[in-house]
Image (tube, rainbow, N blue to C red):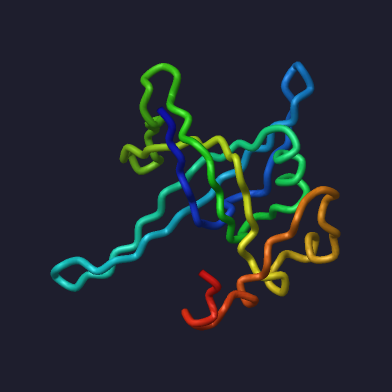
Length: 149
């Protein structure tokens, strides 16, 4: 069995890089995915789901080097359940309501923020060797006729 999750959202904080006792790098950060919709009675609703993301190995180094709080990102990976319950982690918010925390182990991370909107620390950094920078969103075809498939 295999599962995959794809998240499009904004980074909630800069990645924190740590190392396992064996020396493997691990970057941890949060991603907020927003959803807006209108209920049947016309009320606008916005919900935000927070994901805790971990990247391992070379991907962790790249995430720590290029990702900054507020950037739009595409994250592809798998859900990691709570080892005690096998479910998402539950917590109590400061207002007393129950919240859910989802943990994702990233396999792919792509920056979706256009180069002109990136935080200053990342705009003058060259891509890491062996990586291919993703095309800015502005370079995508404008109409369906221009899509090559």
